[in-house]
Image (cartoon, rainbow, N blue to C red; front, side):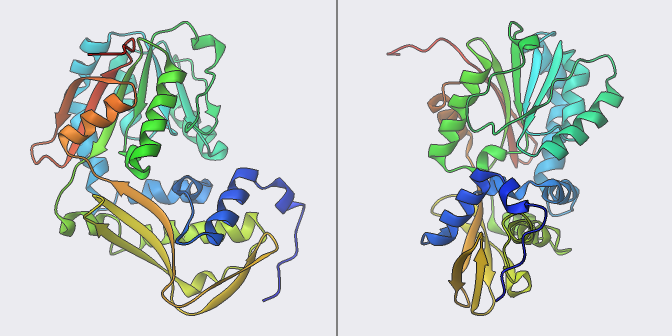
Length: 325
C-alpha cells in the first residue's frame, strides 16, 4: 500500500505516547493498544452515545444510585470539598454530585483536551458560580493539582466503572496515583461494575445499533489520521467476548482478511482472524472491590448498589498508611 502523505506536519504533532503505544502494541504478540487512546474528540462523543444505549446498563444504573445516595454522601464527606473528577464530566452524573456536594471548586482531569474543554463549558453554564479548573493530563500518573485547590479538602470522583478498563495491577497503580494526587484525608467516590451473566454483559459492549463497533473502529481512524497510517479500516470488525477466567469483557478489532499496512512509516501485517486487543472491562464482586481499594491505599467506608445488584458505588478515604493492622 502507498503510505499517505504527511500533511501540515501531522505526524510530528502526534502525541509521542500515542505513537509509542500503537507501534509497540502492533509489534507485540498478542497485539494490544491501551484503551485510553479511544478518547479523541470523536471517540469521546461516541462513548457519550454508548451511555444512552438500551443495552448499556452501567450509566443509567449508576446514575440512579447516585441520585439516591447523594445526600448521604454529602453527610459523610461534608460540604465545601474540591471535587476532582478523573475523566471529563459526564452530562448526567457529574451535575448530580455538584448539586448536592456544594463543592468549593471543580477540577476535571482528562487526557482529551478538546472534550475536556467542551464538557467544562457545558458544566460552567449550569454552575456559573462554581470555580472550575480543567486539567489536561493522563490521570494514570500523580498530578499536581491547581494551586487554587492545593489547601482544600478533596473528594475524588471516578464514576462509570472506568477502573475496570485496567488490569488489576494497573488499577492498583491508578488508585495509588489518585491517592498521591489528592493527598491524605481525601475521599474517593468510585463506581465499579459487578460480575453478572454473560447474556447481560456482552450486549452492553456489542449493541445492535453498532455504536460500540464504531467506537472501537474509530481507534483505527485515529491511527490513520494522527500517525500517517494506511490501516484498511473496512477490513476489521468489532468483537466483544466475555472472559470468565479473568472476569472481564474484552474488546478486539479482528481482521476479516489478510492485511498489510503501515503506521508511522513502519510495516505491519495481520492474517484473517488476527486481533488487536483494545479494551478490557473487568467486573468485581463486592469483596473484590473492597480488596482492590485497600490495595490502592484507600479504606472503604461505605458502599451502595441497585436493587438488582448490577453495579456498585463505593466511598473510600485516604487514611494514614500503617505498616501493620
